[in-house]
Length: 76
Image 1: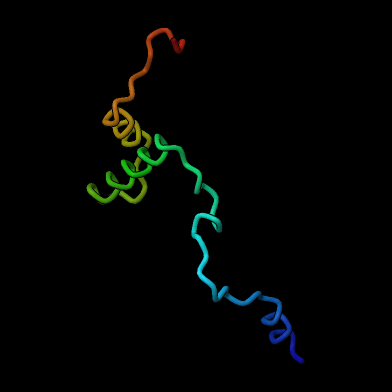
Image 2 (image 1 turned 180 degrees about the vertical axis):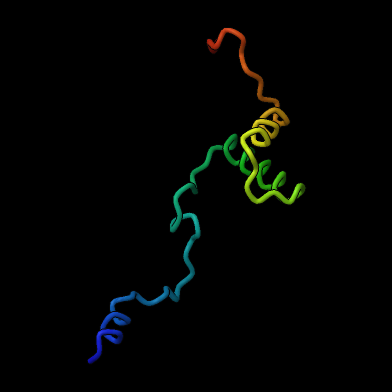
């Protein structure tokens, strides 16, 4: 038996039963705020055709969601 055939046998078969995507990938447990931010970033990327937004653009998305820096830096 050749090496290539032995190597192919080691690969587990693709699951035939339906699986939950979130069970297979990390991040399926995002909070509502995190999900809102990710949707806003995705919308921004589609709207402006920017697959990789700059940090300045990410800050713009934060501000569009209502984020503001506190002056004294202490949460009250």
